Length: 593
Image (cartoon, rainbow, N blue to C red; front, side, top):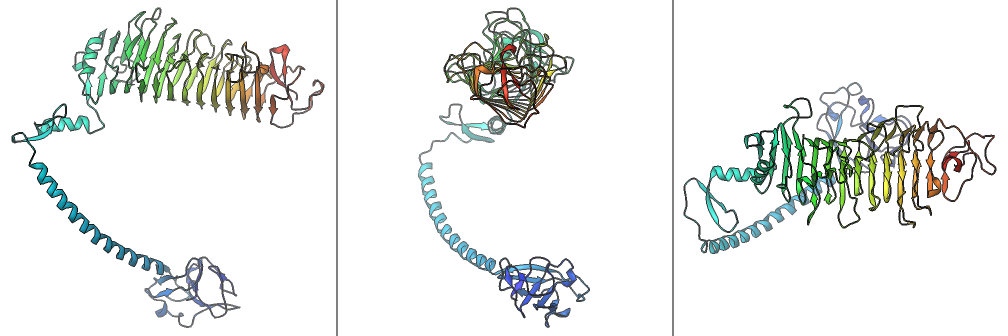
């Protein structure tokens, strides 16, 4: 058989089959017809094709008949087999399937030969290794001094690993369960002297923590557990404090970890220099809201810092406005994961405190997923800088005063790599603050978020503030910002570069594109003279009014967008679609229609 088809073909004329042009008299295996009754062996012709003389009857096309193909791109060397039984040629479907190929047979033969040789070589090598191991074992056993054999025991290492000792099977099983498996022991605090009755249980909780095995464990709390200064977690590994219930109402649902401490405590729960010390299903709160100036949970560092902490399904309330009050301190921590956590209060140094010191510490690689943030008074719930910080799908509410506040960056320490993605910022009812105040750092991405409030007639403060803490040279301020795909509702302006330092060092390399702006009164960007190298992609601006004439610095602003219809009051020398700033309105960017 010269060729075999790989698709439905017309049974007429000389044509290309599997990459080869047929010639008169070629035998072709036709196996892929849409009408399977046409399948079979044909003789190529310039006119109508007919079945080969030796392949026109049911007997010659019976199941098991094989056909070997000689040429083609995909089918050379392949053998196909007929699979129909007692068919009526021209009436019944003719089924043809792949059987094997020449390459497969050669590969199998080669593999078998190689396998036999490999097994023979391996057998000789294994025998030699076994003999060597036997001799070594005999020699080693001669010098071993084992303890006497005790019935129903096993020999295991002692506590310090210097000798072997006999232990019962039950003791060995307990040891294996606590070391070899990922599920560490779970201890019920209420059965260990910690009833959760709103009394100070610092000492008993410390005793329970210190009684856990070195590899760690889980402590299950219930009720209202009060502590003052809990230092027992410091330097520990793999310990998790879990609440019995969720965050519903009633003592059976809510588990509190609270502190009645006032001023001068430093930290309530000391998690410095820890690894994988985590909290789950807990309401964590400082009850003193007047003089409390400590960290509720401190993941900072003494010598090594903390790493791999987790917090899930928790409510954190730090509601003292006194300097030093923090909810969760992450200065000195890395690789934290926070999921479904609510951060609340007017903590002066942040309910979530990042790095706000120009020092050797760190605050790196933390993720916040589906978390909620709500500040109070004039303080931001998130404060400070860090590296590799990611906020995804979080919700931010304005405080009781209606002012929107989320993250206030450090004025003394640069941030590096902050992603705020798919978050919502709402309930804003008044001006006077910014949702995001990024003073200095680089690589800020604000993507797919919603900023705004309810009052469609209001003009709230800027949603995003960039710069304001530069010292007058191009290495300071904020560099590399992408503000893409967001919705800004009645923010005025949407992005501000306000501050007191000139020389255009507040913000550089800022890209604003594919956003939707509503009710901006045409104030897209504020104080543009304090920034440079800005690019604007296509943005949808709805509700722009009150245009006024001024100058534009074309060296520092580029506009990428469609042509806007002509406007009779456009300032001289500016073409349609040009951005310009209006000094009479506080240096806000406006657009010449």
